[in-house]
Structures are given as structure tokens and as C-alpha cells.
Length: 155
Image 1 (cartoon, rainbow, N blue to C red):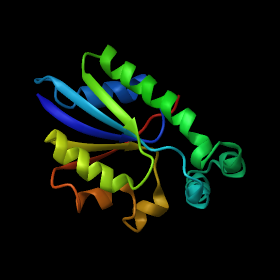
Image 2: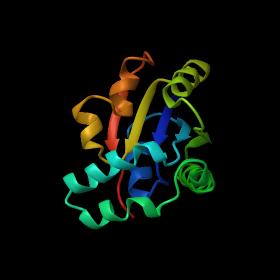
Image 3: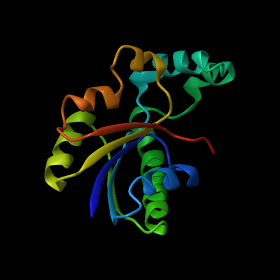
């Protein structure tokens, strides 16, 4: 069985589920999903990413989404939705919402589960990626297993 730690920041859509569940079609899969709620400290970076993608309306509306502690209920719903979708696709799946120190939790989960790999499935974060401050770049130096960066799909 392949064990994958899957870091996400929004609920998975069917295309995302298909993408991650077909990475290893010849073996059973188990996922440990870590859901990062929307953080208020990331507002400027998200707005810059929206501008880089030409999504100016999203950049203007950046403050309309709940952030920080107010984002926890939405993150919990998104996690449940994603776990249900992975299970419906035939994979084992458990998970939790990340409340503090995402990379420390990631390292701990990788060790505890003897994970084979980490998949970071998020929207593009051009500014963070440019400076190698995105989750995938930072995780590669911490977890000791392969880290794959994939872009999440929209609704």
C-alpha cells in the first residue's frame, strides 16, 4: 500500500481526486489529508497571485473570505468533503485541519505514518514559488520523502 500525505488548502474537486488517486494505479492507496485553513497573514500574497493570474476581481475581493480562526469551520467542511471524495474513489483516507506550524505537523505525520510521499495540491502561488517559500519547496528540505507539487483545479 502506498501512503501519501496530501496537503490541501481548499476542498478537492473530482478532477483533483482523479489526479491524486491515479498516481499509483497498480497499488492500493492510503491518504492522510492535511487541510490548511485560509490564513490572514497570506492576504497580500494571495492578492499578488490573483493579479499575476489576471484575476483582478479576485484580488479586489480578497478580504471577503473568512480568514484565521473564522476560517476553521470552512476548512473542516472542506476536509470532510475531500475525505469522502477520496473514499468514494476507493482509497483509504483520514485527515485533520492544520491549526499551527504546518511543516512541523507535516514532518510528524510523515514519520508517524511511514509515508511514501507528500503531495502538495494547492492553487498556484507564484510569489512564494519564485522565492521557494511555498509548501512544496520548504517541505522538500524537511520530510525525507519525495514531494510532488500539483496545481488544484477550480470548481
